[in-house]
Image 1 (tube, rainbow, N blue to C red):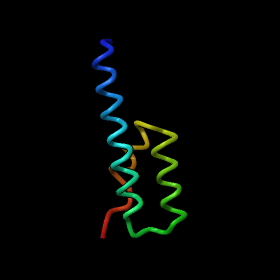
Image 2: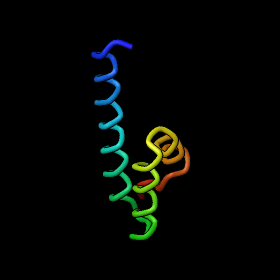
Image 3: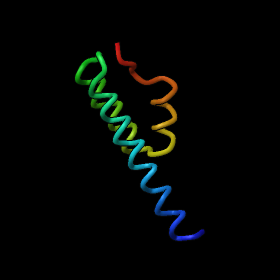
Image 4: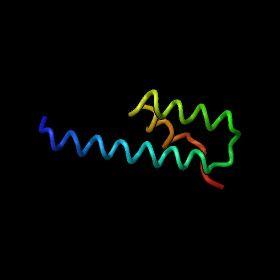
Length: 60
């Protein structure tokens, strides 16, 4: 795989993780749930983002 393409995918993944974390922190769930969601997104990068996108906390 081309190094430039891999770098772009890495930056895209980083942007998605930051966006997910900001969205989770701005949601109306409890602090404990926020911590669990952020850990899920950080520990399971691709799968965690997909699960968060489908079932994660939404802004009110």
